[in-house]
Length: 119
Image (tube, rainbow, N blue to C red; front, top):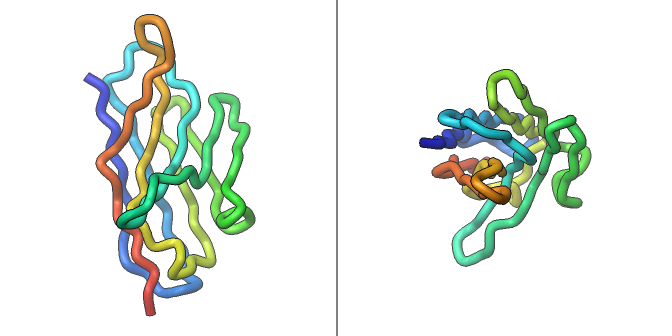
């Protein structure tokens, strides 16, 4: 059974940094893209950063230059290093993993980790 577990959220002040981690276990096939999304109450879940198996990364405009996504394929882990955090970054952050199923890629999500940026 596939499990996706995030960690690393917390309360920080504006300008500080946080590093989120996401570990995927129970995979018996292929892991494709991995990514981080975030959601605030009453809003949709938006993509923050996505990384391909080969390390190609893409970012939303709001975090470009401040956040860095990386992955360790040997450990089925993806990270999100966040610098210069702003109150607008406050959200629940979710890890998304695409895993090849019987015929197609399937989406798996973690339970989310709260990031709060406040003075």
